[in-house]
Every structure is written in C-alpha cells, then in structure tokens.
Figure 1 (cartoon, rainbow, N blue to C red):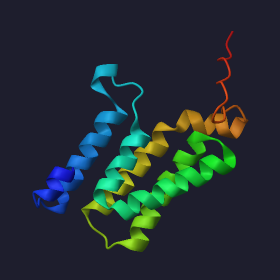
Figure 2 (figure 1 turned 180 degrees about the vertical axis):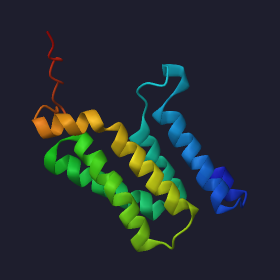
Figure 3 (figure 1 turned 45 degrees about the vertical axis):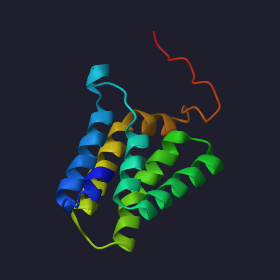
Length: 135
C-alpha cells in the first residue's frame, strides 16, 4: 500500500490495495479461510492510509485495552472509532469508504466475542481462555 501511495496511484486504487490486504488477512487462504489477523492488518492499513488516523485509532485500542483488559472490546471500540475519526479529520474519499468497510467487517467477525462479552465469559488480556463448555 505504501508503494501504491509512493507511485502516486489514485485514492481508489490505494484503497483497493489496502482492502485487499485486509480481506486476505481476515480470511487467509492458507488457513482454510478461518482465523486471521484482521485487527492488526486493519491497523496497518489505517497507518498506510493516513499515519495520524492509524495512530489515533491505535490509541483508542490501547486505552480500552489498558482500562478494561479485553482485547476484543478494544478492537470493537477502535473499529467504531475509526470511521468517526476519519470523518472528523479528513475529507470524504474512497479511503473513508474503505475505513467503513473494514470497521463493519471487523465488527461482524467479532460476533462471537460480542456474545462472550455480554455473557461475561470473554477472557481478559493475560488471562487464560476458559475451556469451551459442552455436553
């Protein structure tokens, strides 16, 4: 993405490159489209789009992680904050759409974590995950 920016490619192309990297890490082909590192890749894409945007969103994540010690809550909060920060700091562009798409996909992919948070079953940072309950 940084190379696309350095080459002077248009905003739509740079956004497509960023989204491609993000989606490829959200659903990695080498792991049978399971798992992935969507939050970390989204942070990298945001830093590539606009370093200040990425830095501010990382600060939101860090603040939430330090205060509440839930990585998933920090990721969800940062996902919600990213488009808000984008709207406040920069003009509407293809990158704005890219930020919104990444945020919606991250929130959607965290559905199980949202359920655990609401049920009080989500493990905190530094805490071992509870064993799965089953029959």
